[in-house]
Image (cartoon, rainbow, N blue to C red; front, top):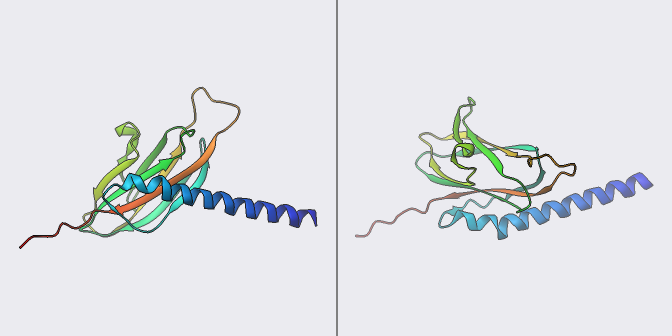
Length: 147
């Protein structure tokens, strides 16, 4: 009986944390998209220092995109890279002072991989910090031609 109660608490607590991260993505992350139109997906989870995550997403040719990554303030920098299906690095934010917003387009429709790595604080601390990280995508609005 204790095991069932513990599992229930863990499951409910996990869904509450996930819900909090989705709210974080809606309230904080979506602002990072600026004038870009949100694709409707809230990719958010709790990560801790040193933890990595990957997100796979299909992008369509002829579209301009913005990726916007948000994190809670207490987390260290997020290192993110965009890779193609062959593992070629298309963007690495380490080369851009760990910026969390990047605008891009693709020449052909393809699936890309977003790799996230929450860096560790220097010097290393005994207690690891964790918090919400959100990855949102937006499409640039089409520019209407005037007649």
